[in-house]
Length: 355
Image (tube, rainbow, N blue to C red):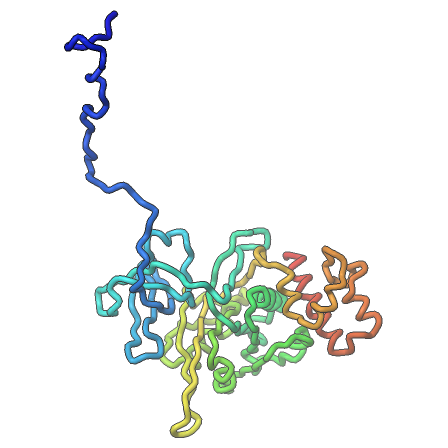
């Protein structure tokens, strides 16, 4: 066999790859790239709520150009959860006019993140709200009966997220909440009580000024009624408790941020404001995502003593060589310290039992 070409030589020009005709790209697409635009012109806004993949975002908060727009999630954020309270970077049509649609292209770092899991064995977290600094736990004195364990779970989730908890007991005209409230002795917990016709709107409102407060509670405890009283025009749906099951009907179906504006106490008095974040009522609150060390850290003076505990100490009453239990036995904590320790151990047990 000869490898000579038509010219009689063996330079094999016919096999030069540069002469091969390449099939053009039938779609005429440019190659995909991981590079994304910087979006230096993006505006920062507050996510007020989400409805079927569309986000309500407040832009220009506190300025003369304040407006609420509708935005969609950018493709590159399809795996990034965007929740009420997020500070979002928005581009596109941000005029807020009817029929316009902006695009969320980024989320700023969150100062806090309130989460729950489907149950205590589920490590997949459900993000409820971002950047809240307070949690108002709403519970009824009766109808439905108060559930101490559920409130404990709210407290654990708040302490894990670094959020200050508050408690309001509604329907105190139906039952005396005193015995129920003794369960929370020793906690640094501000408590409000509310009865029919005697809702402490001004007192609760004062605690909301300057804060972003997420409202949580069992269905039927009067949470939406309280929100409507604090934010006139909020229009949150209210329901009733089933007389047979004793359970409330879910009325709030979505999480939404509402601006609270304190009424002027006197002509010319400055107005204060804050954010009320209303959430759907729940009957369970999974703690599968919680780090118990965050619970201990919320009890500053006890956390300092616990530094002398052996590694892996549970700090529960039956824990061996626990510095906290030893301090209690030696009388070093005092009555107030003992109450705090009992509260800490109850919350740690709530997490550890996972029931």
